[in-house]
Amino acid sequence: MNRRWRLVALAGIAALYGCTDGSEPVDPPPAPASRQARTAPPVSRWYTQEQVIRGYGLFQQHCATCHKPDASGAPNWKTADAQGKLPPPPLNGTGHAWHHPLALLRQIVRNGGIPMGGSMPPFKVKLDGRQIDDILAWVQSHWPDRIYTAWNEINQRKNH
Image 1: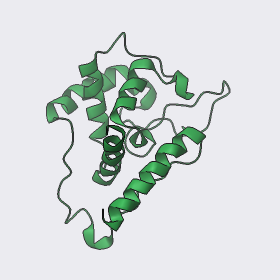
Image 2: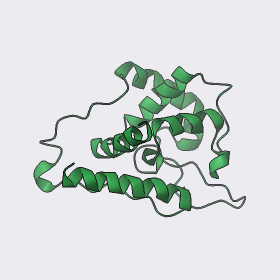
Image 3: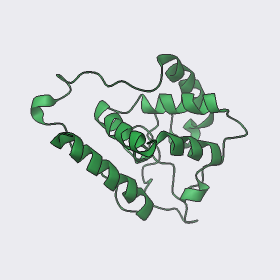
């Protein structure tokens, strides 16, 4: 494993554990200047363009009221409200969603965010598994390649 991937993996591990102890999320290290996006090949993603298209409508219908139509979330998403609940986080790659493997992201949508300190209701009675995956595809389509790559490393480790 080369140095860059070790750093990404370590940042991902630190970020994953950071989510559980309330510390600040950690972004993956930037690519070295000589290997910026202009020379990097496109990152292969788990979802299809059709899922992204379906996910857009589902996100707007079920998620945009809280997470904003562009998935930017609440401005002070790291600060609990008067009831001790965390506001809706951004899902566009600037928050901490990328710290969680796909199975956990699915579980959060299905069962809601209340167990994690938020107030998101469960969607298992409104959305089936395909619809949840479509929403997650639309969300992840907003993640820059470097964020998606760091997420993919976490996701692969958690699935092996």
